[in-house]
Structure formats: C-alpha cells, structure tokens
Amino acid sequence: GAVVSQHPSWVICKSGTSVKIECRSLDFQATTMFWYRQFPKQSLMLMATSNEGSKATYEQGVEKDKFLINHASLTLSTLTVTSAHPEDSSFYICSAPKTLGTTEAFFGQGTRLTVV
Amino acid sequence: GNSVTQMEGPVTLSEEAFLTINCTYTATGYPSLFWYVQYPGEGLQLLLKATKADDKGSNKGFEATYRKETTSFHLEKGSVQVSDSAVYFCALSGSGGSYIPTFGRGTSLIVHP
Image (cartoon, rainbow over all chains, first blue to last red):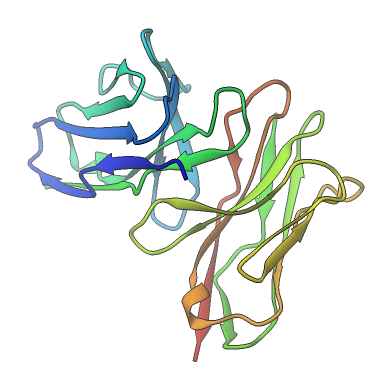
C-alpha cells in the first residue's frame, strides 16, 4: 500500500540552529500534505497544510516564519524549524491523503525533535 | 466546529480481557470515522474505518460501529494481547467539505501479561 516516509526519525540540535524534516510519499503523488505536532500524552495538533506549488496554509497561532514549509514536488514536503528553542522540542508527524479529496490519510513515522 | 471526544486513559487490562474505548463526535453532515493506532516512538497507522452510518469497521480483532443516532464510534476487542499496548486515536474527516482529519486526544492502552 501507499507509504509516507518521514526523515529523520529523531534529531537533537542546539538552540538557535535550524532543523529540516522531510516527508515523502513513496508510491503516490501527494499534492497536499499535513504537518502535525504532538506533545507528550496529547493529541495531534494540526500546524499547517502543505500545498504543492503554492504557499502552505498555517493554522491559527502557528508562526509561519518559524516553521517554514516547502512543498517542492508532488512527492516531497519539508518542514524547517528555524532558530530552534527548547520549547520547540516535540514529536512532529506528517501525513498525506490517500488520494486528493478522500478522507483517509497515510502518516509518516514521526520525528522526535529535541532542542538542547 | 468538528470535535472528537475520547475516554481518558490509561486503560490498563490483563491479557485476554475485553476492551472498550469510547469515542463520540460532533460534526456537520456525514463524516467518515477512523481509529488510528500509535505504537511507542512511531507515527500513526490506520486501524479501521467506517464511512457511513451503521457501517462496522474491523481489523486485527478490533471492531467499531458508526452510530449516527448516538454520534459514537466505540472501539472494541474481545481479547486483548500484550502487543495491543499502544495509544489509540479516534478521528473524523470529510465533514463540512473539509478532508483534514480531526483527532481525539488519544487513549493509552496498557495490557499486562
């Protein structure tokens, strides 16, 4: 079946540096991808919707300049956490709809970001 | 707006016990309903789904029935195993023209041998 691959699975970085997380659809084209953030023992919080060839749509309260999203091709979306701080430490998950306009989504494995 | 409410966890059971995780939702129209499972340190995997009222989704011994009259989609399994220990998320999508999933807060299940 269709697979969404997320990389890296975990990363540790120093405060003030930037970290890029990649999300790839392996055997299907994803014109739309979703980026979520998950705090410990909590649900997934939608951060933004990534659209191939156009700007991402950010949810209210999410800083666009801090969480840069680029959807450069039909199989790749990236989330860059810029000038990371310890409070950005979290589990980030991407997902893509099975096909455009359907309700089922495939999820990446998630990325554990720790900022020290 | 849309919302999904799940019972709080953790749910702690002995192996072979019966499992119920309650889920209710609020949405306009006729959304699709899902249960996702998240194992430690991993992303989410689709466990089962139902797309219309009275549909029953099932997979790996888990079942859930789409009850529109009670706006519920409770997850059940007759005999849990240690390997079922994970966090379970109830979700909906396809309400009001939006295909972005709305998730419940998740329920942690711990199964002891």
